[in-house]
Length: 353
Ligand SMILES: NC(=O)c1ccc[n+]([C@@H]2O[C@H](COP(=O)([O-])OP(=O)(O)OC[C@H]3O[C@@H](n4cnc5c(N)ncnc54)[C@H](O)[C@@H]3O)[C@@H](O)[C@H]2O)c1
Image (cartoon, rainbow, N blue to C red; front, side):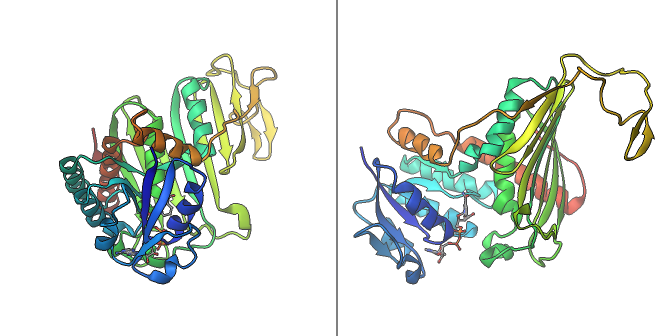
C-alpha cells in the first residue's frame, strides 16, 4: 500500500518533511498547499500538484492522507476540513490551542472514521532517549528529580511565533515537546502543576518558562526553557538533562548527548564527618565521596532518529502497529499546558489528576 500524501503549509517544517519523506518508498507525495504560492516554488517532488487554498487541496482526488503544517491557530479548522474530506491526518504540534478545540477535532475525525495522530517526533531525540533509557533502567535508584532544560542565547523568536492570535509563544512551540517527553517518560498520575511564565523581551508571548510537575510517585519534573540567556558561545543553544536518584545521578548535555552517569552500589546517607578543602573553602558537606564508592559510566548509546517516527507512522497506516503518538496522550499534554498557563497567570499550584 502506498500512502498518497499531501502537505498543507509549505514553510519551514513543510520543506523538512518533503526531504524526510522522499526517503520512504511507502509514501508518495502528491500535493502541496500554501496560501503563499511562492513558498512552493522550490518544491523538489516532480509533477506535484500545488494548491493555494485548503478547500481545493482537500478535494485533490488522488490523496488519502494529509500533514497539517500551518500555523497553530489554524490546526482546528484544517483538521476538521480534512476529516470531512475523508483524509487521514497527521497534524503538527501543538495539535490545538485548547483541549476544547481538540475535542471538536476528534469528534470530526471519529465521525469520518479517519486516522489521526500528531507529529511528536521529538520522542526520538537522542538526548531524550538517553534520559529515558537511564530512567527506565532504574540504576539511579529512587529517582526524585528529572530536569529538562533548553536554552537559546539570542532571544530569536520569529514570524508568527511572536503573536498570540497565531498560537505563538515558546510554550506552544517547544514547551509542548518538552512536556510530551516528560509525560511519556514518567509513569503514574500527575498530581500538581506549577509554572512561572515570563515575557522577558517579547510583549505578547512567553519566551521563558519554568514548570514543576509533581507525580504521585513523588518524582518532580522540572522543565525550564529560556530564549534569552545571552551568551557569546554560538553553540550554547543547548539541551541539558539532570536526573537524580538515591543511588546515582545522570548528566546529559546536548542534542547529541555527552555526559556521564555516577552511581554507587550502596546508599551514602551517612558518610561521616570529614573536613575537605574545596574551592568553596573548608567544607564537610561538599567534599568528594570516599575513594571506591562511586562508579562512573558513559551514557548508554542510543541509536534514534526522527526517521523512526515515520517508520511507525507507515506501519500504523498499514494497520501493523498502533500509532506511537496517541490522541489521549496528546490530550493529556494539552491539559497540562492549560494548567501551566493557569498557574502562570495566577501564581497558584494547580491540582491535576
Ligand atoms: N514537529 C516539529 O518539530 C515542528 C517544527 C517546526 C514547526 N512545527 C509546527 O509546524 C507548523 C508550521 O510551522 P512552521 O515553522 O513550518 O511555520 P512557517 O511559517 O515556516 O510555515 C507555515 C506555512 O503555512 C502557510 N500558511 C499559512 N496559512 C495558511 C493557510 N490558511 N493555508 C495554507 N497555507 C498556509 C504559510 O504561508 C507558510 O508557508 C506549526 O504548527 C509548528 O508548531 C513543528
